[in-house]
Image 1 (cartoon, one colour):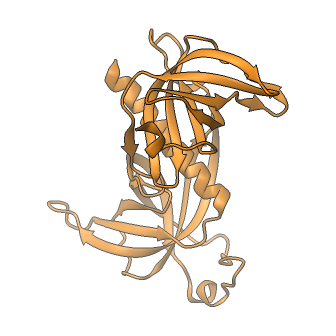
Image 2 (image 1 turned 135 degrees about the vertical axis):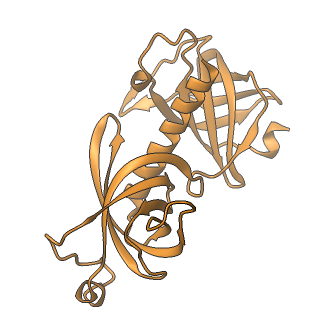
Length: 239
């Protein structure tokens, strides 16, 4: 039953489904709200999303890609708005599920395959020794080596380079992502967890790295980037 997985108060994300593929992917907005009540196995009520203090009146018959953030994991389905109304001073959207609910791998651990330019270097001893609970104090202006990120997650990344980094070493990473249509630069430090030489490509190495100094907002931005890019990929697959 739906209520076995999704409960009132669970956070919800809705992304509009572009059936005719005429709109630019970047115009597909995401709306955040919460579950209000579970009506049946295929119907629920959610709070009408808001932009600051303004209600967002999503259209009746509008179809959405819906994600539920629950205590037992992340779930996804497709749904249609079948009604909107006010009940006890609460503005409600009634949704009808148009697909089965499926469990989606948590975004923090989902590794998204990509090709992204990155510059990196090993931390100097004085940078490691100068670290404190507020973060790692980087020495500016030191030379960086070109790398290529081949997958990324909210917890770390995998990258390829001709520079060999030792396991357990700390590596400074500089790369850019498109967040909400704007390019943002990230300056993060990670610990190398695994290294291997790439088959048939002598002198090139694949490294898996875990972030060490990422803050909550940066992690959420990276996770959102992954989620948005995955949605774009799914839409392209559907044609």
